[in-house]
Amino acid sequence: MSVQNERTRVGIWFCVRLKQAPKPRGLALTLSSTGNRLLVVSEDVVANEKYSVFWGDLESLGPALTPILLLDFIKNDGNILLTLSADSPAPSAISSLLLELDIQLSPDRTSLVVDHFNYDTNSASDKHDVLLLQQSSAERSDVRNYFGGDGVVAFPRAVAQELGSSSPLLTPVVRAPDTAYSYNPKEEAVTVEEPFAVGSQISLVSSLQARNSARFTILGSVEVLENAWFDAKVKAPGAKNIMTSNRNFAKHLSAWTFKETGVLKVGKVEHHLSSIEENSAGNGSIAQLGYLNPQIYRIKNDVTFNIELSERSFNGFSPFIVPPGDELQLEFTMLSPFHRLDLKPIATTLNSTIFGTTFRLPDQHGIFAFRVNYKRPFLTNIDVKREVTVRHFAHDEWPRSWQISAGWVWIAGIWVTVAGWMAFVAIWLWSEPAYERSAGKKLQ
Image (tube, rainbow, N blue to C red; front, side):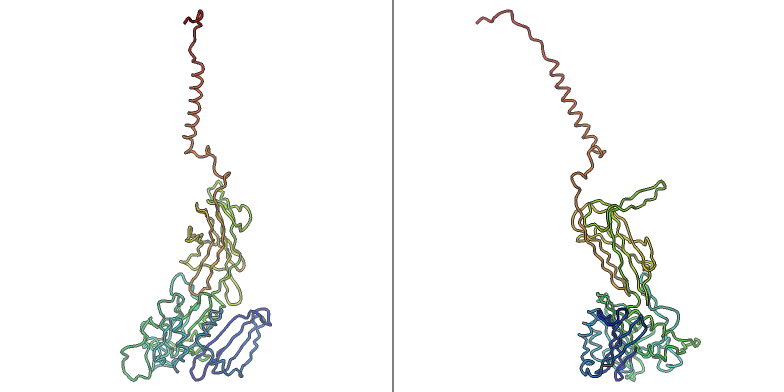
């Protein structure tokens, strides 16, 4: 659905999952503000039906969508897709909202991005304001790319965004080429002396994932989503005519924004006491001891921890695969981690992967927690904690003294002392001197 304000050419898409709805499964609510009216679209994904109601009597609801209310919407797990256009200035409310998120637009709010080397010669042979870019690649090797693919995406009359460096929640999706720059088309100067941003400083598509995993996407060109550019033929300088990939890019961008992709689901979380047994080949096998998820362990116990993870991909869940170069880790922590271990996949089901590891508890008693804190760009956050108590050895659990080889010297010393004392007593008793009897009474 694409609903825009005709005066400002700025569109806002809202999506939030209904907690109590007439339809039991797959019902989503979409809100869009156009002027002073609100369009509500309820879509039943399972039945593939849409129910729409146009609320025209709510005169104050459109302008009431202030930055504060939009931020509250994000705090309540709402997802927003915001589109901009250089054909008209961005409203001050939108600029204020983006500043709250550490995203800055041009001060004049009418600048557009041009590139004299990567443009469409068919539609922008003079102005060079229709950029042709390859579908985005991952910013890092350990981050999965949810917006990539083969083909070229056309960005007509895009608005430049400059991301701040203070927020770890911001991630650029599509950056401008090094030869691009942003300028105000109302200025008639031949050269641009102080452009707002140049090269890779310009973000054409930006994303923010809040700490509650709510998603906010800013698309710098609303025309990317128009039908005219879904099947348009474009031509880069010195190249042949090709079809754009705007349709595929719009599909993946909207799917990620409204949590159809990149959503992690936690299944079973288990931990138990283990015994490591080695066979004749030297390979260790792990056997479960006791019951699952006990509340108390003993120091130096061998413990196994397992967690089940799934990833949503459009209409269903599939086994989660950790990207190459990244690791899913377990922390066994009190105030700080005593162990930080890599979780390896040990089993796979139809729609989930089970990760696990076995380790020995530290020689420290107290209240500990198994914690899996996995936060990566474009993936919903996972923070799982399971608290357990770790106790000391009981009085009958300490090893006997004769089982400790270092104590054999002391044990031998004790028995040598006992044997020496008994020998001394025996010699003392059997070496009594002989006494002579006197012949008569002693005279005084």
